[in-house]
Image (cartoon, rainbow, N blue to C red; front, side):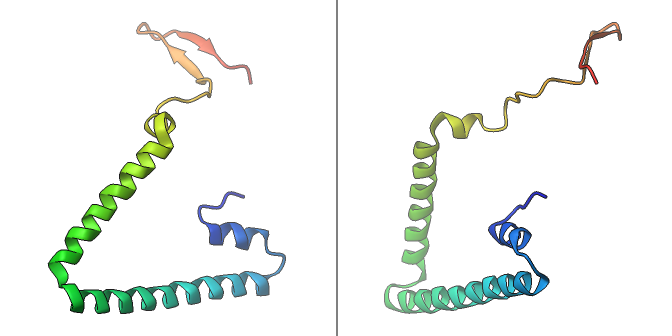
Length: 104
């Protein structure tokens, strides 16, 4: 079973429905409290320096984070998903006859 999120992974490895419910509730609680803290911080900062300077600084921060990810990811980041190690099931030539097939 594949999980697409840390919560999904935790729920997949939980042993009972009660534990999965607790994990889901804890994640929701942390998300709500985190949002409240960030909103409070944003309110204080916007009242002290204004909205326009905040937008400029947040934009610069986003550009910095993207550049950091690009530097840390390096070549792997730019090539991710472009090439596959999987063998194709069948490759057809322009005439329509199969050139190669993978054994079943």
